[in-house]
Length: 261
Image (tube, rainbow, N blue to C red; front, top):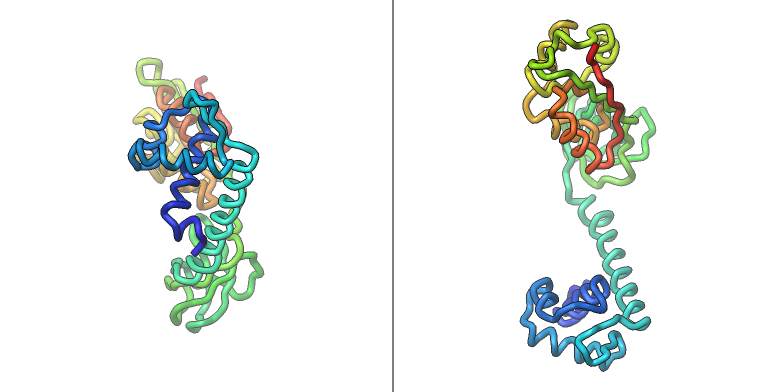
């Protein structure tokens, strides 16, 4: 355990220095107390100690600045935290976490496998070489679910393409004003289709396609993308802005199509 986590005093000093760094020079002791979860009186004592140690400077008017020495102290502790977090994720969690995969063949417990995503599902394979590996916790037959632990490497995902297709509300013509040739072209090679609004559902049915998801479509598109699955979202126009905001908040790229004739 690193000193910062072993010592309540050290961790509190670290949090106070971070708060001062983020809001200097105009930072109030009461605001620091609320953020850190201690009393203003305790903050005052810590600030006196940090000042005596040369980690912060005050001009006497409750205006605090972190010194060069204080910045270096924060950086050193942050590096310690990062190393500890990496240790937890790579050497601890990866050994005790159990992921569920689909077996490509018959396997034995303890066998090393390669892991890959196909159509949003995790598969275990011994023939294809991939960056992510794990150890099976039980025997499994082909196409059966199997637990995998001791994960190492990154699971590769296919490039995701999200197409957002805008259709007009019913008072502006609804599905009757949709360019069906364009819609059919956009959905023909995609296996994951979401609909937002009845107008979108009817437009899809006119090109002989049923959506995979209609309720909770915004979150479904995001989850699909995180599993390497591309999607087409056919959405009534008023639902498009919040959908795009959701995608952008997750850093997901998209293409926008206006399906109005």
